[in-house]
Image (cartoon, rainbow, N blue to C red; front, side, top):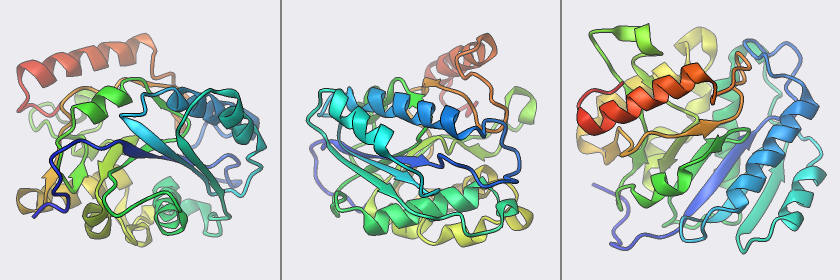
Length: 263
């Protein structure tokens, strides 16, 4: 049973996750310079502030490295907007770095859901990796189902497997939840995301949501292909380079022409 009953679309809450200053020794993190990462976050916040208010009317930026947020505060003053903005910082990296980025990010999400003053019970929350710009986020929100508990993008291509990218995988760069969906599938899950126990968080959530999909208000595929700009943290790769553009173009075509193929 879905947790949201209204039949009109409401603006979404955008939750931007951030680690401005990564802990020393964080594994699989090539983009680790704090100044460079701060520039990424400022550029992303500047972009999201310009989104239409009917799509996003609240933005929550949360940094789990307890870093100075004055540059982000300046962005909120410089960019004309009418959105409610909340900047939160806390020290959430008091765990061993080898636990992995998923552990820290979902711990951050729990902190934000608990401490934010902007989220109301009927809100749908869209999470984005805070350094990245989802260039068509407004369209993703505007074309989303009116009711769901989790709205996400799963990949499952049995024949070619991982040849075109990670398979049996949930894209954690952007996804959305209702209050009920958060309680069912996200709250306190960070404790299970230690890398040595569950492997990648993308595969963990794929298995979790795939198993629960039939009766729990999970919509496992976006209606359109996300268009993401910025640099991946693990390999420092540009998501707008030619290789990624080709993959996105093919995924966009397949999503429309053969939506049963989760490429």
